[in-house]
Amino acid sequence: MAVDLSMPVLVVDDYKTMIRIIRNLLKQLGFSDVDDAADGTEALGKMRERKYGLVISDWNMEPMTGYELLKEVRTDDGLARTPFIMVTAESKTENVIAAKKAGVNNYIVKPFNAATLKSKIDAVFGE
Image (cartoon, rainbow, N blue to C red; front, side, top):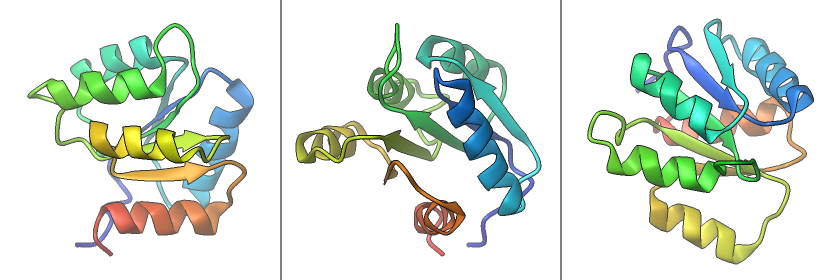
């Protein structure tokens, strides 16, 4: 199944610079519809208003972390199937295991480039 470059993508990060970096990488990969949220609470609100084809979320945010957002998304019948990629600065094994158990589709460790992002997105969509 090819990745649909027209699908809306939600980037969740409390760091504006990181949102800009991920947004630019997504644009390089051909995605045109990129939305963003500053934390898990805002992201959840947006996800309940609009269907996103992919969520790329930072792990460390306040007040709702990316991990908490992931758990909320997976328990919400309307959102549970949304592909979810977690971004983190730490590659702690226990974090990766916790995220996998919570239902994350893929995991990216910062820093990363467009090629890494593309390979992670392709893996999520079975390319």
